[in-house]
Length: 498
Image (cartoon, rainbow, N blue to C red; front, side, top):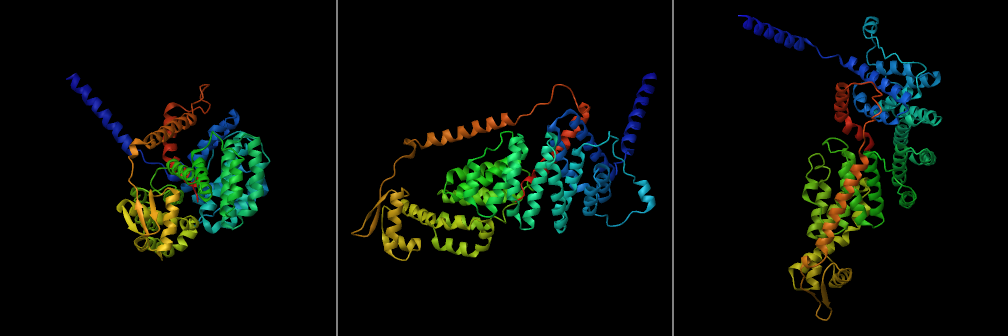
């Protein structure tokens, strides 16, 4: 009987615990928002006291969640709490969004905003955190273009007055958004001297994040105005930092790929572009603009190299529609149909100009002819020049003779021309596997794997063994890491803006 009583008591306890769990109601989104901001303020305070700039990366990653959930009243309260200077505070509050419906006195009492009690005066990092959050919200609302321009113009000069490693990451972000506001106003060239001066300062301070961000902004600035020579000189005289953020490195690779493509260095360009695509966030709906631009450029460069991109590149669900014109262009190049190539180029002329790929696409004409010649060379051991002109869509047999002669000299086809009888004779192909080509391909793959291993080792980070400076236990740390993993791709989306 006693055993039954004990079992029944245990059962009642379990049922009670289950009911308590069921009765727990989810927290109000506003409460969660204030707690999230409070955690960030505590993290900033602890990082400043410890002098640990690495922890600031965690704060920056929280913007991905905050920009979606922050409300105007909480943002205004945060600005009033963390900004000591009255003139800057007035500017921020004037630019800050206002709630659609004003709150009543009762609602204000119930929804009182309380941030953690931290020692005053607050460090400058807290003002940078709140001001940057305001700037991000203004940039998200494209109609607030002028307000974003004013706020960015106030944040950057203020941050320049400090020389603190814990502020470096905030300064890099501020320059990124400043460049974006100038670009939207069509005044990007005016910012170039400021970016060059800031890059020199970042190099002197060994600010890796600032160097990476500013170098990308300068390259973007040059390429936006088609200044490829200046961009190439900048690349040759600078080094991208080794302790680089992944998103910034992906952008750098894309810009290098664009420069190399214009400089006719197609192999290097294709390598850089494919690396950029692999290093982009792999979540399906993140950084679509970046992945689309890199994929379009990679397709054109691969065609210029004489290859044909894989069909799977055009079948990506989120990019399929936008890549349709490039797929049609690839089909024309693959079949060697010059008429179809001209038709597709004229049909999508405006799109190619907008993508800045029209110059490279115009170079493809000879590649279309080469592809057609390759197919003819494989299909016929002997064919007249007039038939070649007909198949390729050329005007006369003399045009065909000139094109074929150039292809033979370039090593595109292995054949000879009989000018007396006006025909092309193909020579017998040798076995590719008896050459060094398989060894070269294997070496290339091994080199790529070794480079990826080296990059992975360099990117590894280890926790500080001197003690837990943030004062969080293991359970809190696991929860924080889960949140960071959930937001990491969204965070990269800003860095991938194109």
